[in-house]
Length: 450
Image (cartoon, rainbow, N blue to C red; front, side, top):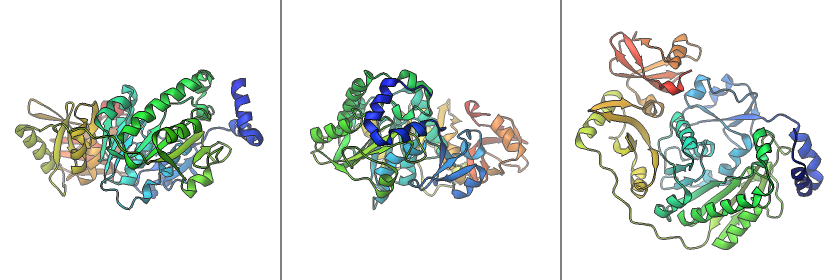
């Protein structure tokens, strides 16, 4: 690994006696890890993967021998998520799990793609509260959407907006804001060689300027007493401690101590609250995280806009589909996001009026579109609510028919189903099919087929 000489000198000055440990760690291969999604599965799925060991600071995190598990049916079904080990630290550092009640929490993941941290947050919320998961880049927002939908989360709103757009309409809305800021990526050198070639020392201060601008907008959206979790995957002090301390002093924040599990996996430079993870400390790449609590007054909220009202005809089409094919405890509430009709809960219905002028990608559970009174289904309805489907076809992992389904083939309707059918693997929902005579028409999206 050829690291820039100027970078190596910086790290030697930064680490001093630990510099040789860092160099030794950089000669070793990067590790792979996964996180189990407790909302869809349990730890029984571990046996399907080559698990090396559990991650000490992450209840559902495991080091695995290879991260190439994307085609495994359990991954496709959203039972597991591939995630770099140290990137799990910011959510753990937030101490969100200690909240006595999560029912009324509103959380913003401001720089969310590809969705690892959003997934951790959604799993801790377990259907309570609201998570707004934002990504400014459209292509990365599409990846974020795919991961959120695959994992089956039901209380997430996905947006594709700039921090300035969000802060205009979402002032004083959130109890937690996570800012995993764009950075120089020094902590990813071992895992991603492209970041090495892109590294330039003169970019550090321009990165810092951008990070400060993002935090200024985040501050407008956070309630007094709320927590802001600032993280990067770089070692540059100018992008880490310097930004966090400047922001805390400038905008009235208190630096908070990280939970003991995070402290044990990390170290610090000048401030004990600003935690650093190095690859020589444990399995994983570089990470910086600092949790800050807002002490200053909050900005005033805007008046909410009107939530989109679904027409009577569309309401009937959607109600008929849900009633005929799913067993829900409560009558669902529908709204329209772009061209898609979605199921939202009461908490999402309360915050969505503030987002009516923003580019919202998805909210709650996407059912699909309606064209000439015909419902065209989205896979999210099956990935999120498949366990409540009236018709289920359950396969084992190695069943040939499951492989055919994932390939996009038609299946025989041996069970004489009528209506729609949820296809499952070991009771984990993957997608849908429609019974047509003696066949099950495959509804698994073409872009996801293998």
